[in-house]
Image 1 (cartoon, rainbow, N blue to C red):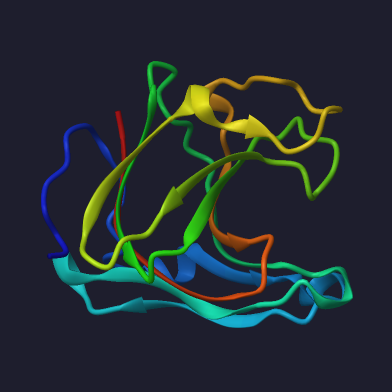
Image 2: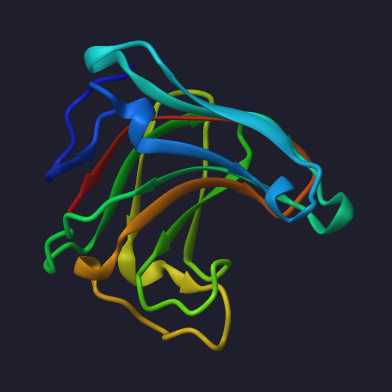
Length: 168
C-alpha cells in the first residue's frame, strides 16, 4: 500500500507538482531505440512515480529513466536511501550524480529488484559504485544533485513504481 511511513526524512513523496520535478529520459537522446514514459499516478499521499517501457540494447541503447535534479543538499550525515517500490520482479537501478562528474554518462549506481508487492528497499550510499574508473571513487551525500530511477542494460519490459524516497 502506498503512503506508509518510513524511518528518516522524506526526500520525495510524489505529491504536489511532482510531474514538474521528474523528467523522463531514454537512450533515444543518443540514437538508441528504447521507449517508455514516467508518470505520476494518483494524488496526495497515494501518488506514485511509475516508470514503464521497453528497454532495447539495439543501436547501442539500453536505458529509460525518471530523473530529478535538485539544488538543496542532502544532509552530510545521510547514510543511504529508503525506497518503497513495487514492480514486475526485474532489476532496476538508482543513479546519483554530483556536479564534479566530467561526463554526462557518469553516475554512482546501486541496484534493486522491484517485487510485485510494495516493499521497502534500503540502499546504503556506501554501496553506490562509480560507473567508470575515471570518476572519483566516492562522494559526499551533500554533493548529490540528481537522482534517477533507471531500467538499464538489458532487453526487457520495464514496470516499476516508487511511492516514496527517504533518507536515513
